[in-house]
Structures are given as structure tokens and as C-alpha cells.
Amino acid sequence: SVEAQVWLVKFCEDTDLLMTESSSCFPTYFKEWMNGQYSRQTACAGQDLMTCDNNTPLLDAFTSACGEAGFPVVATKSIKCMKHFAELNAEQFGSDAESPLRMFYQPTGTDSDDDIRLFFMQLSFASNISWTSPIDVL
Image (cartoon, rainbow, N blue to C red):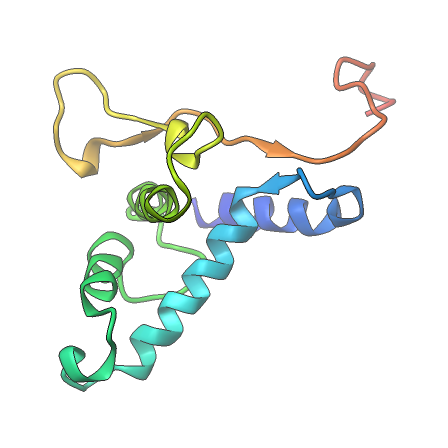
């Protein structure tokens, strides 16, 4: 949902002091990417994409996966758009055990990108709190 996207980014911003070099906050990276792609899309509005942007195929794929708005992504496109971002990330940085692509799965018997599901979202940061502590400690 739109609300969940905004909440996750705010959570990352609120825990920013706990971030280290090895920390990871997918929602923040996703938001930054979305805003960058939306800026490119807006700059090319009403123009021939082939002459406006040298990464036109990527911009077309962005529009197809994510729509024509910035962050947060409409709920009906959010998972497909996050997966698109994860795929581009994997192409650029490699698909290893830490790749955001591992967060998604294709349900058995389906083959459409519209059927992709978010399995989990990992956020990592430094903390001295044991997440198994009683609720009043958390």
C-alpha cells in the first residue's frame, strides 16, 4: 500500500543514526530511484523519448512497471515496480545472496509479472536491542 511505502521510508529515516556501512534500507533506495526515474520521465514529457533520453528503453520499462507518478507508487503497481528496481539493481551490481531479487517470488502456476509477490523485506541496521525482548523494552 501507499501508506506502507511511506511508513517504511520514515522508519529508515528515523533509524538513520543506527545505520552503518553494512546497513541496508531497501525502501530508501527504492524511493531515491523512483524520484530519479520520475524526474527523467517528467523532463521528457511530450517529447520524442528517443531524442530526449539516452536510456529510453529503461524509461519505457520504468513507465510500464511503475506507472507515470513518483514515490509512493500506487498500490496496484508497487510490487511490480519494486521488482523492476531489484532487477536493475541485480544487473548493475550482480545477483548474489544479498540481492533484493530474493525478496520476490512467482507463485506456482503463474507466469505473469502481475502475479509476482513480495516474500519479505529485509532492513538491516545496528542496534543493541534484542528483538526478542519484552514489548515494553522494544
